[in-house]
Image (cartoon, rainbow, N blue to C red; front, side, top):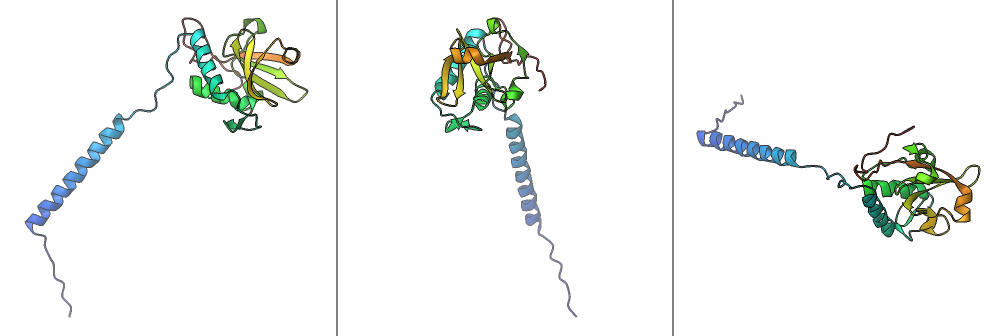
Length: 189
């Protein structure tokens, strides 16, 4: 017959095991405190109005100017017009806009050509099916990802753009007293 021998831990072994569990508990509590204190990335810095919007847009233009056009592209290897709008608004203002020109033309609120402000989206109807979007800089200028030249600055009064101008939408509420990082009321978003 085989017998079983019961081995009882010594008092010293019990104390060591309890101490080890206690140290593990302290480590776990310390880790939880550190993780609980961690914060997410800070939101975009508050802005002071139209001048700040324009400065942010010019900084984005500097980053993107000369990037080649690539349909469906979203990076510096190539970007399309609606992708440029998505990236600029995300990077400059922390706003996530729809990916397509059609969807972008339905957000924000309509704005007349005479009332354009820096940051407004300007849309062009190139033919029956194709649309194009750019970001208004002020003084009749906008930047966009043109299929022939890549990211560039153009003027609304150039014959081609004047002929194809369609509409404009305001996505940022910008006044001299209000920060532009509040999106305007949206339509169809």
